[in-house]
Image 1 (tube, helix red, strand yellow):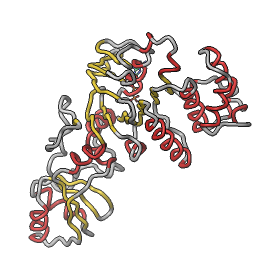
Image 2 (image 1 turned 90 degrees about the vertical axis):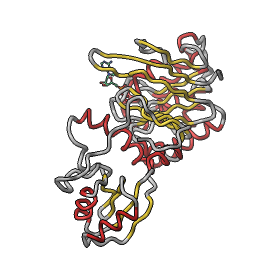
Image 3 (image 1 turned 135 degrees about the vertical axis):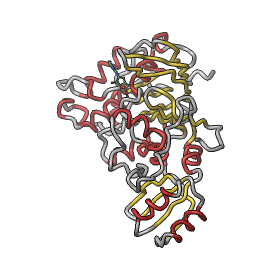
Image 4 (image 1 turned 45 degrees about the vertical axis):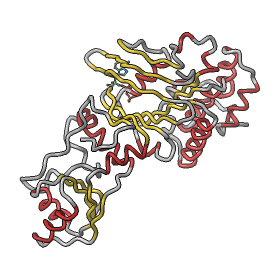
Length: 346
Ligand code: ADP
């Protein structure tokens, strides 16, 4: 195994009655940004804490280059991590905080100024007390700390949180360039869209279990299977007719729907037979966000203890008629989407 590969094998962790991580296996490889995605509470932070030796697994392993984190003599030079940007004492000045970390790890003081520059906190910003920082600035400081030892492996938990649009553009570029330098970059988010255009590979989890471990095009292809996109000014009538014909219908926008379970031709026939006008019918290409919502809906619903939230644009039709098709089943817990999967997911 490459010395920079992060390998998680059958990892397990329980907190009381909660299986926070439940038999998780995946790898993050050098030269790639691996997106680690799942709804809040899915088990991302717990997994990352176990990679960093901050929590002990109940079973399985989370190794870096085949070794547990605690075995590294100079861990900061191998692995840089951002787990909780709020963890710095508010009374500390950013530069002093990093200097302390550098000294403690035998790193030169000049590296502190380099990383502060790199994250946009050079000059006066770096001399401010952290208590006066916005969440975005604290994230930048946390990223500076992760980069301090010029590590080959980066583990970043929700680094985009709190960044403004310029900050988001910046971090995307940073993650891409770190991976292009051959580093292993594992970055978590509860929002798939944050990692669109950034992640080469995505590992999606829900309720501590693997839902998908694949590259972005394969994830999109699996989610796009067999779906038709429909434009109509009479959306609710179309939903009623198509659900009665056995289709699963999801709202895509004010005048658009996605339909699965019926061919485009049969959608046209059903709508025509019921006099429902439409002006667009095409094979649907799922967005990354839709693919993600599709995968994680079951896990998110479980936590919300109710039906899909109304603002969820991909929520399946349930009120279309008394004969509406049941919502699509979530993926079977042990049937995750893998990169080599080419057939339909369900
Ligand atoms: P994520 O990072 O994906 O939001 P977490 O790893 O933080 O998810 O949490 C996974 C599950 O484990 C959640 O149900 C959470 O409430 C629980 N959990 C995490 N840490 C602890 C802890 N220290 N004590 C008890 N429960 C915890």
